Length: 107
Ligand code: HEM
Image (cartoon, rainbow, N blue to C red; front, side, top):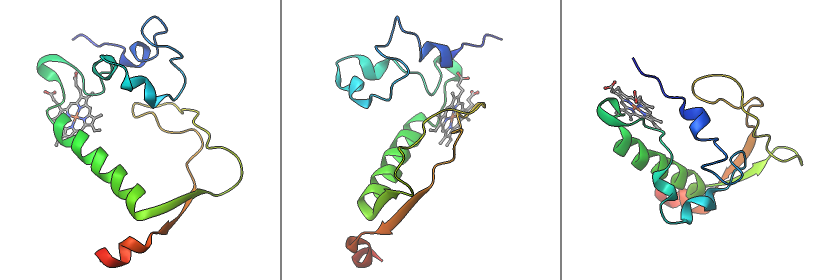
């Protein structure tokens, strides 16, 4: 069995500028969006990748469209990672959300 260290590849400073920083705009550059491998590669790559990408976009867009989000305190969200295969946050995210008026028209 061959295991690749995708965690390290996604943080390789020879491949990424400021690899530790959250910079989603990096993927606006041509070719950058093809570099990450969240679903593996080859014959055993995730068969649910297309469904997952559609769902993640849909769920995230729905949460932004339907709710107003605020931090509980003044401090910025702590993005430090805990250990584990699914990259959990070390400090759980606590937020307040309020449904937007549009939600009343949908339900
Ligand atoms: C954001 C969501 C998801 C992520 C990040 C993800 C990621 C992965 C990764 C990294 C693998 C291992 C690939 C490898 O061995 O190289 C995998 C395998 C697999 N995934 Fe996903 N996956 C996601 C969602 C889904 C969904 C929605 C389904 C099904 C509807 C699914 C079904 C599977 C199956 C069946 C395998 C095993 C494939 C095999 O071993 O041949 N995954 N996934």
